[in-house]
Length: 382
Ligand code: TRP
Image (tube, rainbow, N blue to C red; front, side, top):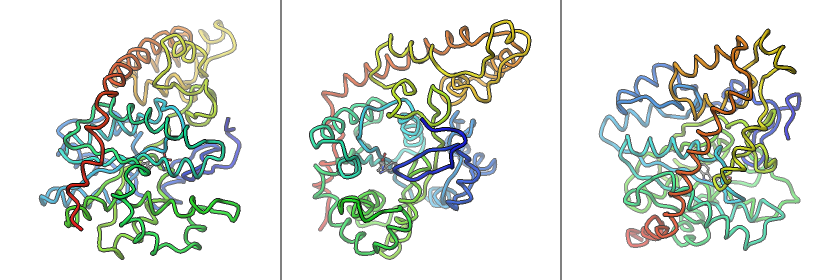
């Protein structure tokens, strides 16, 4: 588990240390989503979104430009993705839930990339069969978010390589090894698949434009650790005659244990979409909080929601009502509520969320083909 005093490291393949999002905006050179931009978004969407309101989505590249184009009648497509290295947890679902909302509000296409090639190359201990299994399982989770097949195309890198390769070779030719080393920190001991990989992640940003022969803006909702990919993708875009992809970036959902993000490498810290009610409840009840040593002390001095993972779950996903959130925060700080009681409020919400998701996940098993990017094969004009 990551420790708070550790140096912050944020790359597409590693996130650790105490996360300082202001510093990330500065170092990555992205823009903050400010009030003015929020107003512009809401003018179009006609409703607020809790993940924007609570600054879970906090940073962007070229979002104003995308909205300019949209208002001129030049629609964008959405691109996001997932590296199928294991089970999906709630932290992964967060940007997907937002993506679905964004897709609905702007009534546009979504290209969702499952990078089984990436995970096979980057995860030393992952066998090919395991990657295949995760790809299938993760596809179910994507569909379970409620996206519609008419405008959602799930790309499986290995299975759909024929759709991607013509663009990938063109991207690859424009990225030197020294750029890749500088941006991604690649080392000589890596396998050469991984070195090629960034060209694959760039492709869906151009795919729509290439298939339909029409330059189309693209926006990528994703966690901020993916930004190095977009820097490279944006660099090659114009050289290849496409628009630079825009992005809208989220923070990591914190784990249920102390410090760090929700991570697959520390199972008690992550709520998996396939967790049973019993396991989910157990994880919530064992969560790290900002409580005091004893009940007596807490009644007297109050607790600290600022470091509490239960409160962060309310804030980011499970308590969209501002009044209710303010109320529980006040009760926490004043010592009126103890951590055990507070967890009893969160647990049923988490369980309800998981049960609904699991139901949709089951239904998705019959529907995978409806979402497959293989449908695009007929549209390609070569
Ligand atoms: N590299 C990402 C991961 O490891 C997967 C991914 C591919 C992605 N394309 C993306 C994520 C676009 C966000 C947006 O999870």
